[in-house]
Length: 456
Image (cartoon, rainbow, N blue to C red; front, side):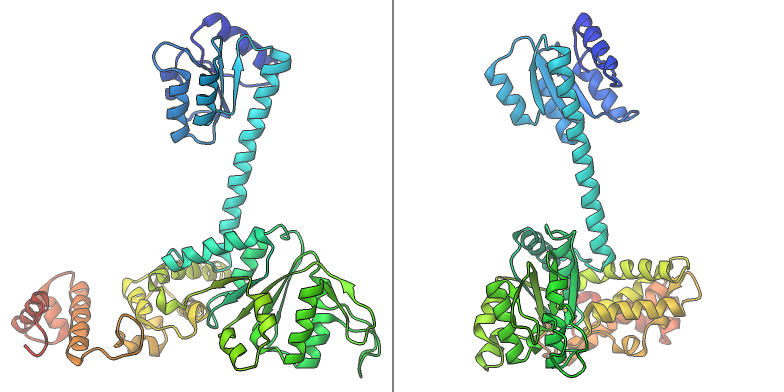
């Protein structure tokens, strides 16, 4: 409580203490800022007078809001004006009271609501932290512009409850995106059910999706609920939806249109409330043009699209992913977390990763299994990674070769940098490690620093 009038200060503090609040009193704004800055006690609410010597309550609010945004502010004054009240709310005050405020009917209920408001903010922040941790735990790691865009789309798609189509190469994490959307949606308290549409035959897939009644086909000795019914109220994730047969596409379209599913062999449909998230590594628009995928189903699925870029297009995410996977698998293997040598990150960042994030995780898991020291070195990487060296394609990733001299210079730069690193910057020692005369080694360094080409 911040109040310059000692009589009011004592009376209000006594009322609040009697109601169960722990109250600290300050005579001016500067003292309040010092108390807040000391951080000795957790402050839920600041109850402050508006007109005081020195800084006013509004000035205290403005300064404190930028430094302690979760602290609720309740302002009180004996000279109430509409302008002051509007300004207080604009600055972020929780409430505005006129002195003298009735303790039982106004002051104490307002303070209790303000504390509850503070607790709600803390709870929201805790849940947001849990959500972020859950996303990282499932591999949604990356701070590149591309992954920030993916996160933005997930946040936009989750509460909208529309059908989402997730596109991306194999191993990019399409199911992780689907699970993130489900977790952030109003359906998060219900089931997330997934199925790989490419893993089953057409008849088995229809039985899995739509269910069947007893005697519907040979071997159907009892009725069975399909995944649409199992996921009712929640989310059904159709992975590799581009592999669906035409007849199954037609049945899926009908479910999306009618919100009802008819089990195989049944004569009546059952209503279902399911959100569909579909994923594919195919270009469905080209599949539609080729007549292999229904155009009407494509438009039903493609309400909102989330496209995950391949790992080769976002190498800046590799260090973060490596750190994530090292921590994840070190914990699983119950061993200390090793450090990762810079040369390892360099090689990993140069690789084209045809298997994307899944391939990277496998490489890190393998390295941890083989690691017997406190460091992951290049010797623990697969042979093809250690021998791949720098990529010889253009930065645009179109597969075109760079000129031979440029490739040679790039190799020399990396070689010289590695030798100098191993020799702690000593040129003579680096030359010895490289097996060349120190004067020749210095000439190579000078040429590379000057930017001269290999054919100069």
